[in-house]
Image (cartoon, rainbow, N blue to C red; front, top):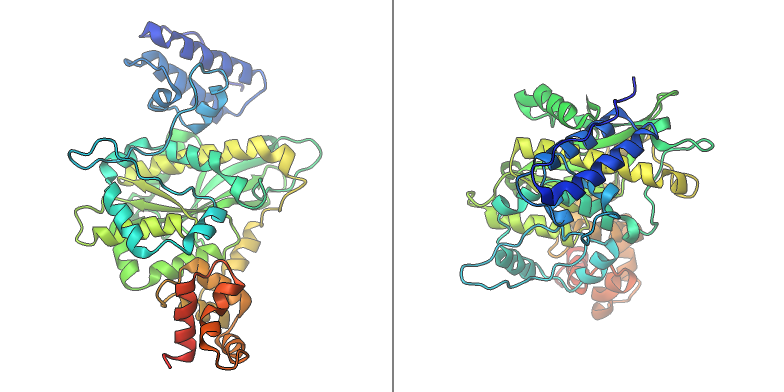
Length: 431
């Protein structure tokens, strides 16, 4: 049965009547196009809460604060909204007595990351994170905005402007052909809260959520064909870490190993979700630095949440944003961009973690070298897949130490001069 046509409601504040009218008209016009029930319900909730709002809504940023309004709703009405697009970046915390000092943060584009990584020293990252304070209590209040920012600035810097798409037949629309399902790893399912978490996300956001054993990551999204039931893995993957687990994984080197496996899984949008407040922990500085390094040097999108409930909301908002992205780009990208891996292909590509190749082991060894990030290690093994092949390349330079130290830096912009020198010392010895 099609959703009922929404009725006009009384608006609590006269200032918000125009915004409420925009939402109602948009909802009615989309119902004429036969939109899915879950999207209709999202618009109904947004309209109801705007009508009941007790604060004036003068900008899109004000609108984003309303319960039930996420990135998909913002995108629908932003062209008609009288105000300009909001600054959706998380608020910066100020030192006591500091007057609006701003820290310029690099964009997340991988091209920019590559060009800046050579000059970004770890000490600078520590200073930057310490200046910003990275206070979770204030930053994570913008749940929903981070996902909108990620998908809006998104793919222009990824080489191709469109992410991988599932196959398209004739003129079919994305939601006519596919159902998007959030898949959570069965080892990631929040302990005893598992069923409740799945139920909460499904009931609040009206999106399908399933549990499977994933070969890598803690969450992915699949597009399941409505007729053939073939499952295609969309170009997004999440690794979720509680702050406690993050500390442990940093100490026992799982942190680097897991990020390397994410980079090699074949999906391009890598999301690192850090759950909890690091400030009460003794190792909060290492957590802050790890998050910043992961985001700036390695091109991940780092999301921060306060706890279980906030993480549920983040998964839900991400799912709606991904549905919106593929609905918008399916018709223009499906015939020209990469085709999504099927779920079986994805599993085969990532498994078996126990069957490490020689190159995998070499990459893990390289990541123990100072200034060598996951990005650097991957760049090196693309040039020299094994330790023997790298040593042979050094030997061709006939003992010219300065040339040997610079060799990797000269061959790849992903390897800065310090990392190039340190890798040479690892292979050839201090001399």
